Length: 182
Image (cartoon, rainbow, N blue to C red; front, side, top):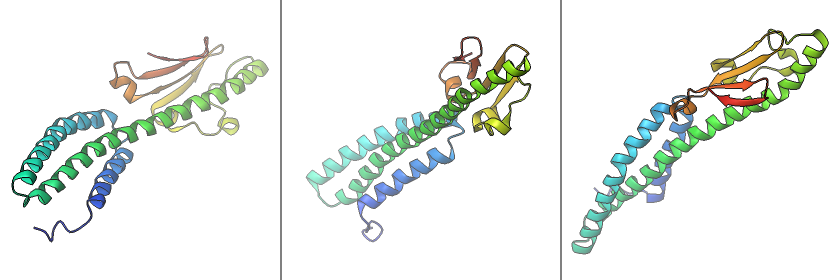
Protein backbone atom coordinates (compact mmCIF):
# COMPACT_ATOMS: atom_id res chain seq x y z
CA UNK A 1 0.00 0.00 0.00
CA UNK A 2 2.80 2.46 0.79
CA UNK A 3 4.36 2.01 -2.65
CA UNK A 4 1.19 3.17 -4.37
CA UNK A 5 1.03 6.33 -2.23
CA UNK A 6 4.69 7.39 -2.61
CA UNK A 7 4.26 10.78 -4.26
CA UNK A 8 3.69 14.21 -2.77
CA UNK A 9 0.15 15.03 -1.71
CA UNK A 10 0.50 18.42 -3.39
CA UNK A 11 1.04 16.67 -6.75
CA UNK A 12 -2.16 14.68 -6.25
CA UNK A 13 -4.09 17.88 -5.47
CA UNK A 14 -2.57 19.66 -8.48
CA UNK A 15 -3.60 16.82 -10.82
CA UNK A 16 -7.19 16.86 -9.52
CA UNK A 17 -7.42 20.66 -9.79
CA UNK A 18 -5.96 20.56 -13.30
CA UNK A 19 -8.57 17.96 -14.27
CA UNK A 20 -11.33 20.36 -13.14
CA UNK A 21 -9.80 23.21 -15.13
CA UNK A 22 -9.43 21.09 -18.27
CA UNK A 23 -13.01 19.82 -17.98
CA UNK A 24 -14.23 23.42 -17.65
CA UNK A 25 -12.48 24.37 -20.88
CA UNK A 26 -13.48 21.25 -22.82
CA UNK A 27 -17.12 21.13 -21.70
CA UNK A 28 -17.79 24.89 -21.60
CA UNK A 29 -20.34 24.67 -24.42
CA UNK A 30 -22.57 22.34 -22.41
CA UNK A 31 -23.15 24.53 -19.36
CA UNK A 32 -26.47 22.96 -18.33
CA UNK A 33 -24.79 19.57 -18.13
CA UNK A 34 -21.92 21.21 -16.26
CA UNK A 35 -24.30 22.60 -13.65
CA UNK A 36 -25.86 19.19 -13.14
CA UNK A 37 -22.42 17.64 -12.76
CA UNK A 38 -21.44 20.40 -10.35
CA UNK A 39 -24.47 19.92 -8.12
CA UNK A 40 -24.19 16.14 -8.29
CA UNK A 41 -20.49 16.31 -7.57
CA UNK A 42 -20.96 18.52 -4.54
CA UNK A 43 -23.79 16.35 -3.23
CA UNK A 44 -21.47 13.35 -3.33
CA UNK A 45 -18.09 14.95 -2.57
CA UNK A 46 -18.95 17.05 0.48
CA UNK A 47 -20.43 14.20 2.57
CA UNK A 48 -17.68 11.85 1.36
CA UNK A 49 -14.98 14.36 2.33
CA UNK A 50 -16.54 14.91 5.74
CA UNK A 51 -16.73 11.16 6.26
CA UNK A 52 -13.06 10.73 5.29
CA UNK A 53 -12.12 13.59 7.60
CA UNK A 54 -13.93 12.12 10.59
CA UNK A 55 -12.61 8.60 9.94
CA UNK A 56 -9.06 9.93 9.44
CA UNK A 57 -9.27 11.86 12.70
CA UNK A 58 -10.59 8.85 14.63
CA UNK A 59 -7.99 6.49 13.16
CA UNK A 60 -5.21 9.02 13.70
CA UNK A 61 -6.15 9.46 17.32
CA UNK A 62 -6.65 5.75 18.02
CA UNK A 63 -4.31 3.73 15.88
CA UNK A 64 -2.08 6.01 13.82
CA UNK A 65 -1.57 3.22 11.28
CA UNK A 66 -4.20 3.71 8.58
CA UNK A 67 -4.08 7.47 8.90
CA UNK A 68 -1.91 7.90 5.79
CA UNK A 69 -4.46 6.18 3.54
CA UNK A 70 -7.31 8.21 4.98
CA UNK A 71 -5.27 11.41 4.75
CA UNK A 72 -4.91 10.80 1.03
CA UNK A 73 -8.66 10.22 0.87
CA UNK A 74 -9.26 13.53 2.61
CA UNK A 75 -6.87 15.31 0.24
CA UNK A 76 -8.59 13.73 -2.76
CA UNK A 77 -12.01 14.74 -1.43
CA UNK A 78 -11.07 18.37 -0.69
CA UNK A 79 -9.20 18.71 -3.97
CA UNK A 80 -12.19 17.25 -5.82
CA UNK A 81 -14.56 19.79 -4.27
CA UNK A 82 -12.27 22.65 -5.30
CA UNK A 83 -11.81 21.01 -8.72
CA UNK A 84 -15.57 20.84 -9.34
CA UNK A 85 -15.88 24.53 -8.47
CA UNK A 86 -12.92 25.36 -10.72
CA UNK A 87 -14.61 23.34 -13.47
CA UNK A 88 -17.78 25.45 -13.21
CA UNK A 89 -16.03 28.78 -12.89
CA UNK A 90 -13.89 28.09 -15.96
CA UNK A 91 -16.99 27.47 -18.07
CA UNK A 92 -18.58 30.65 -16.72
CA UNK A 93 -15.47 32.73 -17.43
CA UNK A 94 -15.31 31.47 -21.00
CA UNK A 95 -19.02 32.19 -21.53
CA UNK A 96 -18.59 35.73 -20.11
CA UNK A 97 -15.66 36.26 -22.46
CA UNK A 98 -17.83 35.19 -25.43
CA UNK A 99 -20.70 37.48 -24.37
CA UNK A 100 -18.26 40.38 -23.93
CA UNK A 101 -16.93 39.74 -27.45
CA UNK A 102 -20.47 40.04 -28.84
CA UNK A 103 -21.14 43.27 -26.94
CA UNK A 104 -17.86 44.82 -28.13
CA UNK A 105 -18.54 43.76 -31.73
CA UNK A 106 -22.08 45.20 -31.71
CA UNK A 107 -20.89 48.44 -30.06
CA UNK A 108 -18.40 48.77 -32.92
CA UNK A 109 -20.98 47.78 -35.56
CA UNK A 110 -23.77 50.20 -34.57
CA UNK A 111 -22.03 53.41 -35.76
CA UNK A 112 -20.99 51.70 -39.01
CA UNK A 113 -24.56 50.53 -39.65
CA UNK A 114 -25.88 54.02 -38.87
CA UNK A 115 -23.43 55.52 -41.37
CA UNK A 116 -24.55 53.07 -44.05
CA UNK A 117 -28.20 53.96 -43.37
CA UNK A 118 -27.38 57.64 -43.55
CA UNK A 119 -25.63 57.20 -46.93
CA UNK A 120 -27.95 54.65 -48.56
CA UNK A 121 -31.25 55.31 -46.77
CA UNK A 122 -31.55 51.78 -45.32
CA UNK A 123 -29.67 49.42 -43.06
CA UNK A 124 -27.71 46.73 -44.95
CA UNK A 125 -29.42 43.35 -45.31
CA UNK A 126 -26.13 41.59 -44.44
CA UNK A 127 -23.37 42.63 -42.10
CA UNK A 128 -20.54 44.45 -43.84
CA UNK A 129 -17.87 41.99 -42.71
CA UNK A 130 -15.33 43.66 -44.96
CA UNK A 131 -15.53 46.69 -42.62
CA UNK A 132 -16.42 45.02 -39.31
CA UNK A 133 -14.66 41.68 -39.62
CA UNK A 134 -16.22 38.33 -38.85
CA UNK A 135 -18.73 38.31 -35.99
CA UNK A 136 -17.73 36.57 -32.75
CA UNK A 137 -18.63 32.95 -32.12
CA UNK A 138 -21.97 33.49 -30.37
CA UNK A 139 -23.28 35.67 -33.22
CA UNK A 140 -21.77 33.45 -35.89
CA UNK A 141 -22.88 30.05 -34.55
CA UNK A 142 -25.86 30.72 -32.25
CA UNK A 143 -27.01 34.11 -33.44
CA UNK A 144 -28.09 36.28 -36.30
CA UNK A 145 -28.19 39.77 -37.73
CA UNK A 146 -31.32 40.94 -39.50
CA UNK A 147 -32.35 44.32 -40.85
CA UNK A 148 -35.28 46.14 -42.34
CA UNK A 149 -35.16 49.49 -44.02
CA UNK A 150 -35.49 51.38 -40.72
CA UNK A 151 -34.16 49.00 -38.05
CA UNK A 152 -31.71 46.21 -37.40
CA UNK A 153 -31.39 43.45 -34.85
CA UNK A 154 -28.59 41.36 -33.39
CA UNK A 155 -29.59 38.26 -31.45
CA UNK A 156 -27.94 35.17 -30.06
CA UNK A 157 -28.70 32.30 -27.70
CA UNK A 158 -27.01 32.39 -24.31
CA UNK A 159 -27.39 28.97 -22.73
CA UNK A 160 -26.55 30.06 -19.15
CA UNK A 161 -29.17 32.84 -19.33
CA UNK A 162 -31.66 30.27 -20.58
CA UNK A 163 -30.84 27.89 -17.75
CA UNK A 164 -31.08 30.68 -15.15
CA UNK A 165 -34.74 31.22 -15.97
CA UNK A 166 -34.71 33.50 -19.00
CA UNK A 167 -35.53 32.55 -22.54
CA UNK A 168 -31.86 32.62 -23.40
CA UNK A 169 -32.50 34.64 -26.55
CA UNK A 170 -30.52 37.85 -26.10
CA UNK A 171 -31.44 40.65 -28.50
CA UNK A 172 -29.99 44.07 -29.20
CA UNK A 173 -32.86 46.56 -29.28
CA UNK A 174 -32.16 49.00 -32.12
CA UNK A 175 -34.62 51.59 -30.83
CA UNK A 176 -33.27 51.92 -27.30
CA UNK A 177 -29.76 50.76 -28.19
CA UNK A 178 -29.61 48.22 -25.38
CA UNK A 179 -29.50 44.46 -24.87
CA UNK A 180 -32.54 42.61 -23.57
CA UNK A 181 -33.17 39.03 -22.52
CA UNK A 182 -36.34 37.81 -24.18
